[in-house]
Structures are given as structure tokens and as C-alpha cells.
Image 1: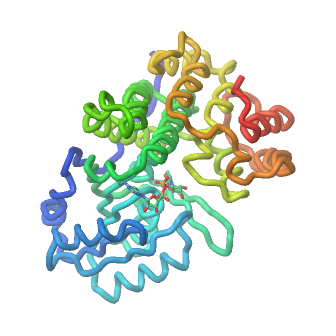
Image 2: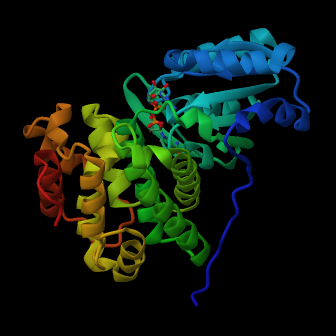
Length: 361
Ligand code: NAD
């Protein structure tokens, strides 16, 4: 076996249906008395429910979390937390709300209890992306990692089937790139394979459930499995360096304002097809946990995306054909590690196929 370094993620995890009811206990365990609850305007009802649960230990709700963590919103939230004398923040929502919790926590030192409601995985990473004056910057710092994560499966039941599918594939992408990361190790590979296995079996049930009574009967178990898978995939994201796929999604999504999870979903099989010749062992691992792969990881991803009925073309989200070459150019700007040499012409063709919705190969 190879030599390796494994650093365990130091957060505490509370998992299960109804787990958010343990929030008062978690606050008490951390010795906190004054929580500011964070959400998007869309999920303010959930934030208010948590306020009710905490009673006098909730000092307020800030419901302005937004995509890409704009710093002006963070500044307002920090001022509000200070005005209220908050001693911790509780974020409830997807990656955008988790981002706000991280941004407040790193600025103020306030403890962050995170209750994720999508499969994005940000709660397991020491990474924060923020935008200011239209520019997105990303930093990594161990203090960014939330101290406590409460995975309440019940809060994911409102995630629409389509969003569940793309958010779940976003999570799978973290595990895929962890399998061939330069700092991968046997523990991460175990987590990655288990995460993909769980999501690949649960997501088709979640998508089918609204119209298929057989799938609906197993929906609660599938929701638990999907969130469990997302947790493991988030750990992979937080523990290893990501490569071409994440770089492309960052560039394409960020530069052309495309939706985060949907972009990941479309690009993933193309990025995997590009890297496959350089990482046969990782591809074998991935194929092993993707139903219908017949030993071919790209085929396995295509089968999964077909079953999920997700959109396969970036052009459907407003990306123009002229932007394909521009995206390839930006993707080449900063050097980053990738298992296969990143060739501008080949990357342009990869993005073109993803733009057009052509099959990955
Ligand atoms: P999101 O947080 O932007 O959520 C999208 C919308 O769905 C919001 O309106 C939200 O309120 C709503 N929503 C969330 N959960 C719901 C639920 N259970 N039911 C109904 N509606 C729900 O989307 P996301 O994909 O979770 O996160 C994307 C953002 O997270 C991006 O900005 C991305 O860069 C960031 N991210 C960061 C990291 C990291 O490690 N720093 C990792 C992954 C994602």
C-alpha cells in the first residue's frame, strides 16, 4: 500500500430524521446562549421554526443569504450579529447559506452550527468563496469549517426532485475528483466510493417518487441515504485538491453566471471522459459503484444522468456558443494540478460538447 497522510475533519456530526430538534442540546453542549439564525429569504420559514425551538436562546433571524456569498450581505449580517450580541450562528439551507455562516464565523470567531438542506457539501469543507464587486475569491482556512453539522433528513424532503438530482450529482463530482486527487488516500477512496454508491442508488428513487408509487414507498430511506452520501462526498471535497472538473465548473459557472449544481451535472461526464485515460484505477473504482456501468465509469455516469432525466446542455442555461472558446481560454489562465495534461484545444472541445449536450466520450 502507498504511504499517505490523512487529516480527519474535526467537526461534530449529528445525523438522522428530525435531527434539527437536537439543536437546543447542541447549543447547550457548546455553552452558547445567543444564536443568530441564517437562511435565504426562501427558507425563512425554516429559520423561524428553529427560532421557536430555541426560544430565548435565539436572538434573531437574518434571512438574506444569497448565491456566491456577496461581502456586502456578510457585512450587514456581521453588524446585525454584533448588535444582537450573538455568540453563535446557526445556518439552515444550501451552500449559499452555509457560505454566509462561514463568512461571519471567520470574520468574528463566532461558533457556526450548520444545518445543510441540499447535497452541495460545503458544510464539510474549510473553503469559503465570496464575491465582491463581481469578483469571486476563494480561500481555505481550517477555522472556516463549521464546528457542528446537523444533518436533518426531514429538511431535505422539500428539495424538489430536479434540484435533488443536480445537487446530488454535484456531490458525486466531489467524490469522483477525490478518487484521482494528488493527495488522495485509501480512507478518502473508501468515503468517495461509499458516497457515490449511496447517491447513485438513492437519487433515481427520489426522482421517480412523485409519479411512481413503488419508488414513493422507499422515499424516506432514499432521502436518508442521499444525505449520508452527500456528507461523505462533502468530506472528500474538504480533504483533497480538486482538478479539471471543479476548475471548469468554477470558470464556466462563475464567468457566465450559470447555475452551480446544474453546471456540475452537465460537465461531470465530460471531465471524467477527459481524465479517464490517465487514471485507470480511479475509473475502475468509480465504475464499481455506478449501476449499469459495465466496467466503464463514463457509461455509468451517462446511465445515471439518463435515469435522473437532467438537462445535459449548457446552452439551455443561456451560455452562448461564442463563450465556449472564451471559457476554454479562462480555464487555461491559472495552472492547477490535473492527472492529464490540460490542452486548450481539447478542453475547448470538452466544453463545446457540454455546451451542445452531446454525449461524453
Ligand atoms: P443554494 O444554497 O444556492 O440553494 C438554492 C436555493 O434552494 C435557495 O433558494 C435555497 O434557499 C433553496 N433550498 C435549499 N435547500 C432547500 C430545501 N431543502 N428545500 C427547498 N429549497 C431549498 O444551492 P446549493 O447548490 O446548495 O449551493 C450552491 C452554492 O454553494 C454555490 O455558491 C457554491 O459555490 C457553494 N458551495 C461552496 C462549497 C464550499 O466548499 N465552499 C461547496 C459546495 C458549494
